[in-house]
Length: 248
Figure (cartoon, rainbow, N blue to C red):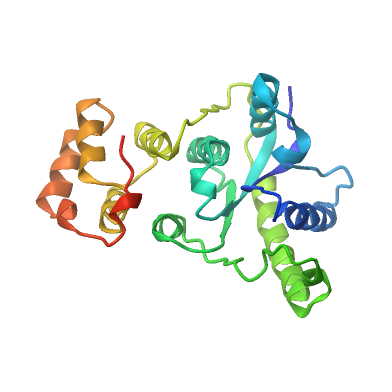
C-alpha cells in the first residue's frame, strides 16, 4: 500500500455542520492542488468516504494510515468522539517519529479547558468559531471571504508538511481509543505529554488525581512524574468544572 491522500480532515461531523465541512474540504482541496502543483491531490474525510460497522473501522484505519498529514478541527464534541481521538492519536505518534517536521495542523472552535490545554501544548492560534455554521447564507457573506484567506494560509502550512512527510510505512501505528480517558492514557504510554502539559491538565481540571493514581498503579505513568506533580502541588488545584475531569 502507498499514500492515497495528502490530508486527512478530522472533524466531528453532524447533520448541522456536514454541509459546511464538505464545502470547506472542496475549497481546501482546490487550493492544495495549486500549492502542490498536483491535480491528483486528494483529501480524506472519513464520514463521507466510508460507512458503518467493522468494514467502516478497517477503511478508517486505511484512511488514517494512507494520509500524509492531518487537519484537525478541535471542538468540545471532538474530544467526545472516539474516532476523532483515534485519528489525532495516530498522527501524534507518527509525528513524534518524523524528524522532518510536524504532520498535524489544528484549528479550534468553541474553546473549553481541554482545548485551552492542548492549544497551548501545540501552539495553536487559529480560531474558526466565527466560520463554522449551519447557515447556508454564510457562503455569500463577507465572512466567507475571510475564510478563503484562512484556507489559503492552511493550504500553505499543509503543503509544507506534505512535502516533509515521512516515506509511507505499512506499519504506521493506528490505535482506536474507546473514549477520552483512553486517549490520554495512550498519550502517556507513547511519551507524548511533557511535564508542563501534565501540570496544565491538572490545573485546568482536564485530568484529576485519581487518573494519575490509577496510571501509576497500572505502570502507565512513571512514579517520579507523579511525585513531582504532588510535590509542586498540582493535585491541589480546584476548578469549578470538576464534572468534566477525566478518570481512568
